[in-house]
Length: 320
Ligand SMILES: Nc1ncnc2c1ncn2[C@@H]1O[C@H](COP(=O)(O)OP(=O)(O)O)[C@@H](O)[C@H]1O
Ligand SMILES: N[C@@H](CCOP(=O)(O)O)C(=O)O
Image (cartoon, rainbow, N blue to C red; front, side, top):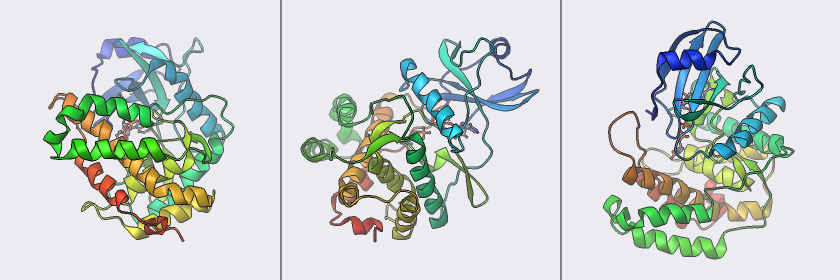
């Protein structure tokens, strides 16, 4: 569960008076999520999500994230819309944190996605890439190699507590990434965290995308690699080729990958696995146990890093 900051009913009621959302009927902390504190609000005009921004979100980046949601929604991507206050602002302050109200999206995230869902996600990811192409704001990826390095510097000394030998393994990976990370591939706005918990389905149909708080400018194929990691591995850490094929076919039905992007997939998937391993490892070692936060297991992504290191051809992901 991710509720880092508690909100008292009185202060929430007063906060909501600034927004055209009606009167507060009830609210509760949301169990899912990792990064921010989220609350489900029921008001006399409907349901909303209240987000209080926490550890990894810089307040200066909020106009980018919120502007992006508005831009994508205008282009037909189903995603939440920030609610504008009576004074024309979108970002308020509640319980000492930057706070925003966004519209509620109907749908359920999937615990066990099938290949058909992976195809839908691939297609939606490519649509997001095309829809973001004319967004006017930019944001460099704070979790690109330099950002990974900062996390690693903070966690390296205790890494072997989590997995013996991890420090040496990741040091060697960094040397590879710093030497050979692809640079000249198509890039633009990416979601950067399109995991199953951030995609809603109604029945078999994808109904919406949420959680744009890692979105940034980076390689489109890196976003594809992140989705392969997040959607196409089974609980036993085996890669499901049928899901990989479905995801890549779905993506390419909207935006075909170039030969250079295809060739870079193993390196990008390895880097993406390292990125998620590192945020998980950092949190594993620094966020206190208990309370209202469920920490994610870094070892799941160590397994993926090893899988990608052994890949010899991008066809092993299901590319024709
Ligand atoms: N717009 C929305 N509509 C419906 N539910 C939402 C919406 N935004 C967030 N949620 C719910 O809140 C949870 C946490 O949101 P998320 O943005 O993933 O948080 P975090 O950034 O902390 O990971 C989601 O898993 C979902 O259950
Ligand atoms: N997807 C990341 C954690 C970020 O959490 P989210 O709830 O914002 O998706 C991971 O799995 O490590």
